[in-house]
Amino acid sequence: MKVIIIGGFLGSGKTTTLLNLGKHLRESGHRIAIIVNEIGEIGVDGDTLSNSGIETKELTNGCICCTLKIDMEYTLRTLATEFKPDVVIIEPTGIAFPRQIKEDLALMDVPDMSFAPIVNLVDANRFNTEIEQIPKFIMTQLEDAEILGINKIDMANKDQIKDVKAFLKQINPEAIIHEFSAKNNDQQFQKLRYLLAGDSRECHIFEKINSIEMSEVSTYSAEYTVLSQNLGSDIAATISKISLKI
Ligand SMILES: Nc1nc2c(ncn2[C@@H]2O[C@H](COP(=O)(O)OP(=O)(O)O)[C@@H](O)[C@H]2O)c(=O)[nH]1
Ligand SMILES: [Mg+2]
Image 1 (cartoon, protein in one colour):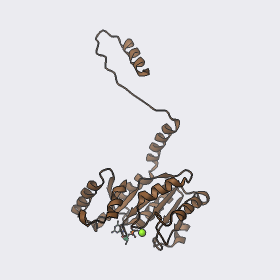
Image 2 (tube, protein in one colour):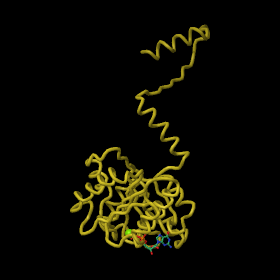
Image 3 (cartoon, helix red, strand yellow):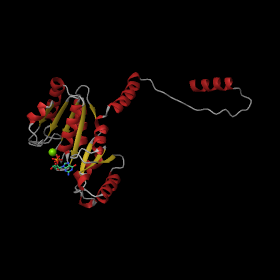
Image 4 (cartoon, helix red, strand yellow):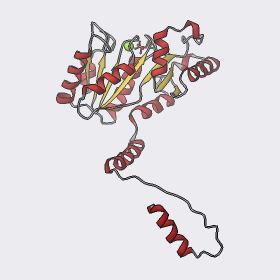
């Protein structure tokens, strides 16, 4: 069960991203569950989603990174045993700290749980790049993200996007910064889907990495240069093999 956490300020496009992502993954044969942390957040009838095969849970009256931790654990365990999703997409409130949620979930020890990179969305139009104007909790969200998504580029001009990008890079140089339009489901948004859930090609790469990890076999390669003119290739090869064993 892979957990995708999509954070970001109110209105940045979390629900739009979650729904588009969920529908696409559903269409490509995954079992999807979504958990939202605010009543009415989805804006789409829960039954409609259930009919399309997406299981929906709403956790309300609190924040899943503080007061609703136990509800969250119960919900995840129930999902894992009853619905058995491949992917769970979580939309916390705009003020939650996604990294804290991830750390709490990891401690819950729900079987077979893995995590996609933490996403934090910003609205390309409304994001204020004056550092003094940014509240501390938003700075923490930006610093904690592994993918910083600049959303709504269909409404922004190139300079705006460039400024936001440069600013985010300064705040969090480690994160992947990726711009797209979740609403238009543009090509860049499709790339975000691959970054989060992988496509068949990337799944293949992950499988390869996992199988190496699982087999606990490590690989090593070295290059030797034979400097002596008098050394035959057979002897050189033997010496390199001996040094490798050392
Ligand atoms: N133009 C445009 N509007 C968007 C995009 N993504 C989301 N929106 C709109 O922005 C508003 C807030 O989006 P929503 O997904 O509810 O944000 P949330 O509060 O972070 O969940 C809605 O009216 C969306 O239709 C986008 O890529 N482009
Ligand atoms: Mg929302």
